[in-house]
Image (tube, rainbow, N blue to C red; front, top):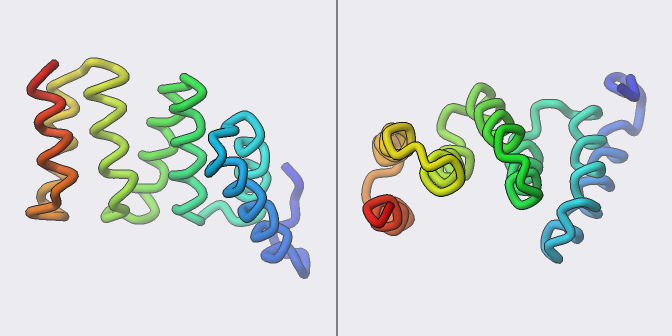
Length: 129
């Protein structure tokens, strides 16, 4: 841990790491984005956007359990975090092949976001499984 929590300028340092991490994320360079997002979270542990993006990086680096843990962490901070709710469906249904948990996650997503087109798309994917 860097221990910068209360250090003046820590927020700016976190922001710079996130910006650079986002560049790597957008380029699909998960291995380069991961340490930057992790460092940013050491400076600001409650940034749910970064937590979810780090989860996506882990998922794409085939670290599925770590990804799922991050989506759950984001949901503890913000229970209606749309992307974390959706990504949880994908991990359970597509990556882990756990249709029951995926359908439960889908139900939770639809409860928060009724009529969301992405829910219909992922439901169709789960039907194929």
